[in-house]
Each structure stands twice: as structure tokens, then as C-alpha cells.
Image (cartoon, rainbow, N blue to C red; front, side):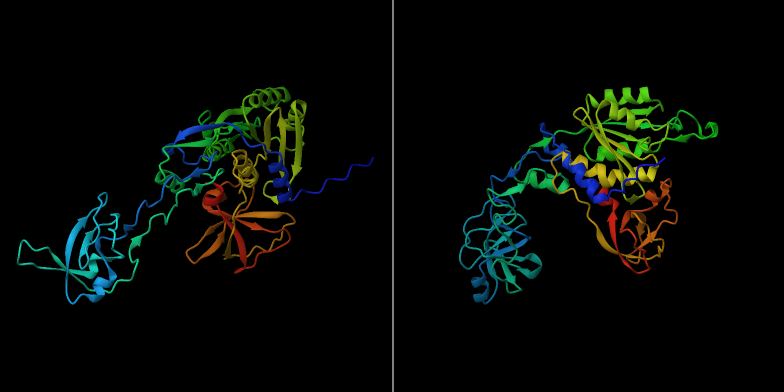
Amino acid sequence: MSTAPRKPLMPLDDALAQLLASVQPLAQTESVSTSDADGRVLAEAIVSGLQVPPCDNSAMDGYAVRVDDVLAAQGALPVSQRIAAGSVGSALQPGTVARIFTGAPVPPGADAVVMQEECTVLEVTDASAPPRVQINATPLPGQNIRRSGEDVARGDVVLAAGTRLGPAALGLAASVGMAQLQVVRKPRVALFSTGDELVLPGTVPPEQMPPGAIYNSNRFFLSAMLRRLGCEVTDLGIVPDRLDATVHALQQAAASHDLVLTSGGVSVGEEDHIKPAVQSLGQLDLWQIAIKPGKPFAHGRIGAAHFVGLPGNPVSSFVTFVLLVRPLLLRLQKVQDVAMKSIAARADFDWPRAEKRREFLRVRRNDHGGLDLFTNQSSGVLTSAVWGDGLIDTPPGEPILYGATVRYIPFSELLA
């Protein structure tokens, strides 16, 4: 009896392209306070209605001067006015300087600011006379002046639609007067695990764990990563390894969520019910992806909801989430640039075992500017993802020799 030839493993880039092609970004938006918008995605571009800074202002505490007056002066120059931030000075009188503070408007006529450390205030004997200042360094025109609009000009698009907002972006939005921001609504994600061997921490003490049972770790790191990506998470816990229970859980979750995410049960064993359950409710692509760890991966639709099934091994689940689920969720929120960013780095180890699949090794930066390798790269060793601070993206068939340049992807890039 002949068997059908096994399909070749799908390259990761092809799987990601298919996944992203299936995404219709969320249309609903909401208005949130700028102070509460960290991690959200802009639905509308922000256009500045003013200049930032609004006027030429001083970058230093010091003295506003005319450069020609300083060059022509035989001695000290009198101080004709004092200008603090928030106040407005008058035009600078010829042959004088103005005491000025950081952020204060530069008075008309002044063309440089000399920092106070380069000036000497002379003692005066006549209390009615203005203080006099000796300028000890020759200023250049424009020195220490922040020009109006040098940060943002009126009419500039300061933040484009699809920008994922971080602290600096929130500050920029506030600098052009935005108290409220229109953002894409949060994706709603239902999360559950499958497997009769799974036990929820807190329900059974370690010393009473039955043979073959394991604590459900995937639930916790997947939930945390989903929330970091701005999702509303509904945790449906552990679903029993029964087809009817799996169908019921999927049906209920798909009715009110944008994504149903599961871990475990995406292989083709007798106790793996995800495939027939999803197929009975919608459509499913069960991919064998050419990566290690994380070969089994499922994507489909149940009604309007996306379905993603991750492998059960914790590191496989972790890696496939950051490589595939993260970009899906970002694109769902209208983020266009979802590609992972790698950095050229030096491998301070040997990895002679060239894999047929593209491999993602857990590594950590060392004090010498290189990368150290976690000794156990098994897909079940979650310790490697805690010890490590990133992944090495290793092409198939390529061993790594000590000192080689490799593609390093920091977790700060993948988990932000």
C-alpha cells in the first residue's frame, strides 16, 4: 500500500507572508488619553498645528549677545535686561547683553548665546549702574540658539498612522498639543491550552503531582506577551483532550474574539483534536515550518476570527509566537513594519551541528561584546529563554564557528 509523499517543510518567510496576507486590519478605533496610549497604535496621523519650539530660544543659561558687539567691545558689556523661560524680552539694545535662561525666547537683535561659564560678571561700585559682563570666548552666529520649528514645523506629520506608540512618541504628541489620540481598538484574543497532562499552578502542590502531569507554563508567558502587544486577553484555561470539548471551546471563543490562540494539540496524533475541531467549524492550514524549534504550526479561520495553534513544547511555543503571532497581531492593528530586526554580532562559541532547518538558538550577550550559547537547546527547556537575552537566526545547513558573525535578534525587539 503506497502512502502519499510528505509535503516539504514550509520556509518561515513563506509562512509569514501567507499569514500576513490573510490579515484584514481592524477598522474600529477609539479615543484615549495621551497619557494612557503607551503601546497602542495610531489610527490617524498627527499633524502639528504649531512650531516646536514656538520661537527661537536659548539652549543654555548665559547671555544673549550680538556677535559684532562682542567683537567690537574693548571691555565688559552692560546687562540691559533679564529674560527667564516663559517671559518675553524686548529688542536687545546695541552694545548690551541680556541675561537669559534655558528655554527663554532670544530677544530680537541677538544672534548668539554665550554660556554663563564663559562669562565673568564684574563687580559694580555704583548701585544705580547696570551689571557688566566680560565675554571670555568669541561667539559664533547662531551659537546655543534653538531655532523656531527646528524640531517640528507647522503642518508636519509628526506621527504617521500605524505608529506603535512608545514613551518618546507620546512626548512628541504632547509637544504639539495632543491630549487625546485616536488609536486602533485592542485586538481581542481568546487563549487556551489543550492536554490532560496539564495542571494549573496552585491547584496541586508539587509533591502531589501525579505521574506524567506538568504545570501549564505556556499559559502564563503567552498571556503576558499578548498583553504587551496591546491585546485584551480572555484566558479560557485548559481544555480536556476530547473532540467535543475542543469544538465547544473554539466555537465559543471565535464568536467574540479576533484571534483564538491555542498551544498543544496541533500534531496529528490520536489525542490531537485541534485539527478536526477547527476543520469542522471553519478552515485550517496545518503547516510544518522549516524552523527549529517550532515545526508544527496551524493557522485558519473560524467565522471572522483567526485561529492559530502553537506547538505544546514551551520553547517551540515561545519562538513561534514571536516569529509569527507577533507580526500577525501588529498587522491586525495596522502596523506595516512588522519585520524582526537583527544585529550583526560575534559568536563566542562553536555550534558545529548544521541543521537542515533554519534554527533559532538562545544566546546571551557577554562582557566582551560577543554572544554566549545556552548549553541545552532543547525545545522543552524554558530556562534557555530566561537565561538568554535573544536569539541567533541561523540559516539551514550552516554551522557556527567561534568568532563568526551571526544574526542576533534581541528579545527587547521581539517582546516589546
